[in-house]
Length: 369
Image (cartoon, rainbow, N blue to C red):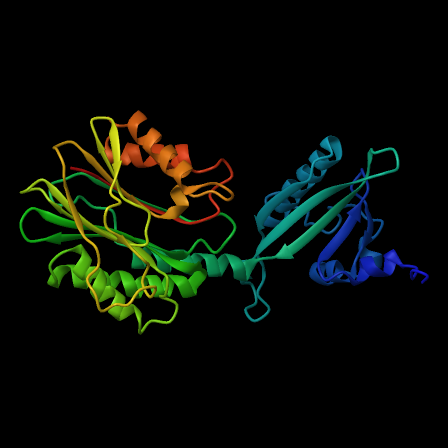
């Protein structure tokens, strides 16, 4: 069967993204239909003209500043042969309000196009408006911050909390943490992880966090609180297979009572030695009959010990056994054992998160006992 001949010029012009080709001296060599639409120009007004041909003469305008950044990026690509990506704010006139401007955000990608000898001959410039994505991200971050408690001391004890979203998403997810003061010198510390990402997972997270916080105030012990949460989770779409670690710290008896619904075990650091609290782990919410008692265990601690609760984004890596991640956590804790909670939280994230950012979200709570 004869393969059809492809008219690449026609394909280029029909591309759904806004794409243009420029020469080394930043003249437009070609532009597809979507690029012309975004620019608001005809082909005759663009092709053969310099990149800056339609920019106002005033160097202090926002448009001129954007163009300077774009010009510098294209020159860098031409000289190095490396692609360049940027997020750029560039406001546009509001058609409904004369004299007013509307906030807009654009994703810019500049790519070298090599010739037969491998040297850069053309520069491919792609622009895509991402205003709605930026706005959605801002809303998501506000939602996440509203659902999670603000960092604060745990009674008279020192504590630190961190929430780090995975790279490449709306930066909102189903991971959560909570700290609940009880009567006497007692505190509940919990972390949880809802399956999934985005606003739907965050909504489920908010419901479960609130329900567990209420349960911890009225029932006796972490296992019983998780049993109540499991019953409640049956009525919440998307709550199945949520994992939770729930700990009750009692400074009067120097004990930690804990229970886990399929969650990675809390870590207890004492004098440079790390013990994982893994003697009371049951299946996640919705993965077991919620009519029997959950497991619960108690361990003692000495003054100055450190309790660490976290979600799996801190320790898990693709194609890696979870024990490797736990060992990495234990090693980091031991090396930074003298650090205060805030500094320790930063050190753990620096040690355990990969350079490009984690692919899963992370919630982290550290309490100096």
